[in-house]
Image (cartoon, rainbow, N blue to C red; front, side, top):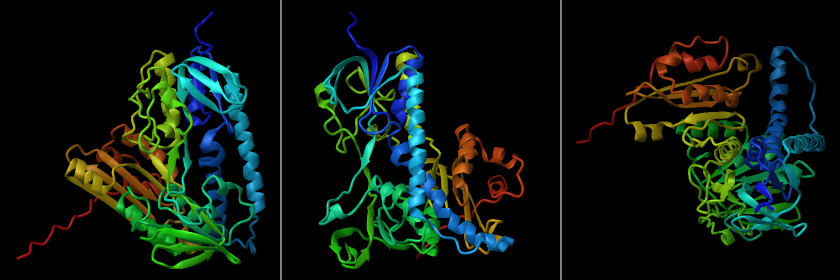
Length: 461
């Protein structure tokens, strides 16, 4: 009788866990996956996918407005929240079915249960009480939204988990936070007609992004009617006859119908039993791993948001695949976390790869900056006030493009393709010799020829 029941036991059937399970099974491994909620994980069930569907919904208001300039008379459009949520739920159900089917086709056994670790090779299935012995254990349980720091009345707020299941569209909503999730949902609700207040402790949104992008987004959101309450925090929430009274750190009080707190996420490691297998976590609960996603306990690996490396779905997928290649495919594979194209599905949309201007100057010293802002072609007839911003950062010594920053329609689509070039090490000369596709917004990426002239500091005295 073999010492192990399975070759691989995966805890968590999100993007990283599912990919790892399928690839490992393809190498001939016997694989089990335990999932206590729904197959597909945060991204598919209550993250990227349903959020993007809501983003699409929110942008139709602009389309209806723009149509008049092109000769269309669409009448007075109306929006029904219940229809959006119902159709969104139907699509999520369909996608979960596909994820389940793909695991089953790969020969992976799915256990609908929470699973906890008992030792380096043993997993306890809580629904049945069974104990499974595994040659390797992969932890891919992701992360959960937090409502930190705790405040009086904090239970009146919701997180990005609950926002997908609101029964009605809030007329007045306060969004707390300045990162991806807060910015995206502020844009969604503003587009759907809610009065939106975005509260953020910093002086600008999207910390870590290029300063020009941060400035342009703040201006665009203010123009779209989002009330930006910057350099403030949420102090307390109180239930009133008219809704929720939100008190801010400056003493001001706003009454709203919902408060969405999007101030951060923490790894789902609590109660997982990691300590029984000699796996420690850091101060935020993340599992430290090496370049191959292996913990200090050789039989236990971890991928995705639970490791708090680069918390993006494509990275979790890449890490899960690399794990399976390394452990079961005899192809040791390391995931590069240094150069990652990413998009923020705000309205206007943002796409980024590489360094912002300030970071590039710190890393490379002498850089050239190419920047353009312009009114998109569609806005010339629609009368829209939106602007497009594009920016290239180039290392002077090597001529390599080390940063691409885009804000405007379909920035996410553009940055995916720009990401190929930057990942390959494209130079500014490579961009310059690329034939422009006209008329497009993206052609600006290959037609910027003159770098900005940086002002030299004036000597005093």
